[in-house]
Image (cartoon, rainbow, N blue to C red; front, side, top):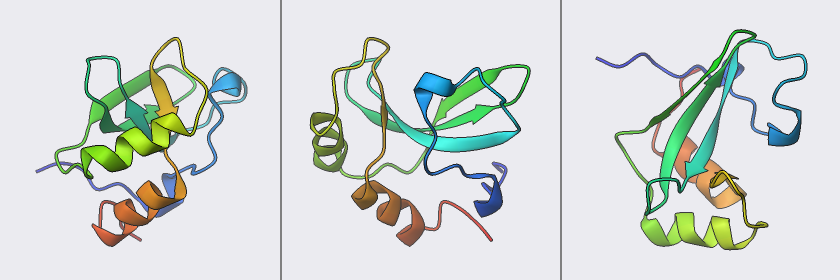
Length: 97
C-alpha cells in the first residue's frame, strides 16, 4: 500500500526557480515529460534531497498536454500543474485531509 499524500504537505504554488532556497519537507504535483509522454508525478522535497515519482492514477493525456502548452518550454521537462489538473487531483481523492 502506498503512503497517503496529506493536504497540509502539498505546496500548490511551488516555484522551481526557488527549489534550493529554504526547502522544508513538502511536496507538490508536477507534469513530468522527461520520458516522452507527460505523466502526473509527485515531487517530494526536503532540505536533503528531491524525489519525483509517477502516480498510479493519471488524468487524461489531453489535460496534461494542455497544461504544458500554457507554459514556457522547460529544459528539464518538468511543468507545473494548472487549475484543471488540481481539481482532477482533488476530485480523484489523491490527497487526504
